[in-house]
Image 1 (cartoon, rainbow, N blue to C red):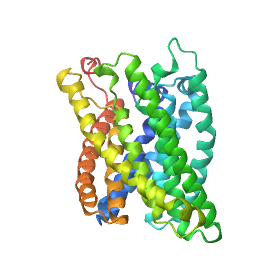
Image 2: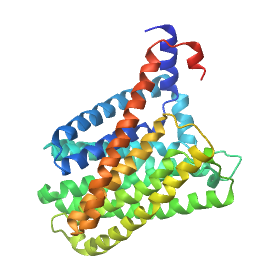
Image 3: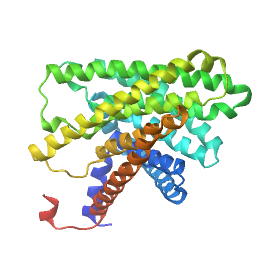
Image 4: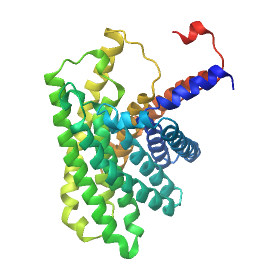
Length: 353
């Protein structure tokens, strides 16, 4: 590797966004959708990419923590980036759920245990540091779409626990409890986060440069809440399911409607950003925060439609799945080109563009 390439690699690791595990999340959820629809080979390819990306990103994150501990610390103390660390939790659980579909429940349980432990730590630390961070403006001014990944992480725990519950034997009650509590916490976090983000939009200037891809998680967090609710409905009989099942089922339908309502304004905001204000549409790691909500909305629609016998919702999920896959494919090609440019020598004029 040339010196220039080594320098670019080092810079890439130092500036690695903590939200890059959204790549794992996006690949995993589209793989889940393809498996549900019977496209097994395509689903398997996506599973391999999902698992490989998870391993690579773990290695790069450890490398970054060892080589650039200051960069990790700065991310934790920056409310605009810190919530991206929750993609590690969500990515692990999405991968775990897909492994369960492939017949490896032990891996699902192991990843749930690891992700749950991480969530219990950063679920308190990151919001605390965000509230106490030394900012010239109010913490509300730093609220953005990445904050909704906090919700996604909680609901991913609910989905993984609900997936394992029917076959957990004597531990079934524990998994049911974890699923319902995590779902409930996720709903609470969504409401709180929505208030902070809404206040940021109302109290501070918001231009096209501020509408970054993670704002799509506004919809994605609702979609994963719907999927978690559908999975809880499908759990085996348990006291927690009997007590909360009907409420969760009804709210899941409501949340699906709200998530659907969010899609047109998000698309319009993207057109406003890139067409009206001519901000270039280029690859950036946060673009995976668009692909994951698209895939999650598709899978949530498929699951809700099948569980509650809603043909229209099921049909929407089938169509949306291919839209999500097309978006995933375009983004993956763009990412591959971006990575190749790190290692291959290019003209200085191209590098400066």
